[in-house]
Length: 149
Image 1 (tube, rainbow, N blue to C red):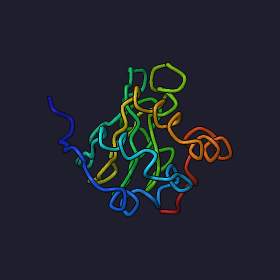
Image 2: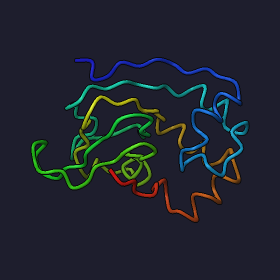
Image 3: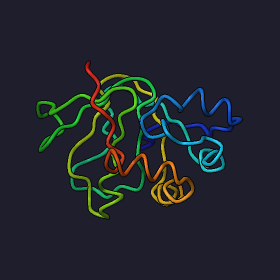
Image 4: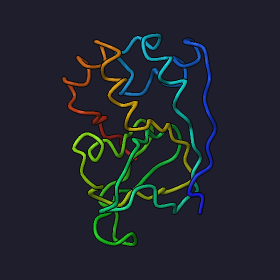
């Protein structure tokens, strides 16, 4: 079963800066230093109710919300949401960085568009930009500021 539909992204540095420069992950990063990596990422559109990450399952990608909203739930997929994540939020990074299975369910609260960064690219993103490493160490590993919904 296909869980998402995606399309590759290919843009100039200026287009990347417009599309992603407002995101916490890229806020203090020279986009030109990671543009070749962004070329290897994809954007996906997911429908409301889609289980993006499943508690206890393996994961190989991080997902950044470009449009829409996600919910984090513990236990069952129909459990009450612990929190809602909006534009700029990042999920999946803890399982990639810790090399452990996913710790919670992540469900699309409504139709959403996400930037997908495969785990093997994550380390390249970190290593390719000194600014990215400095900015992320100040905020912690890929933890965006919570947004009010």
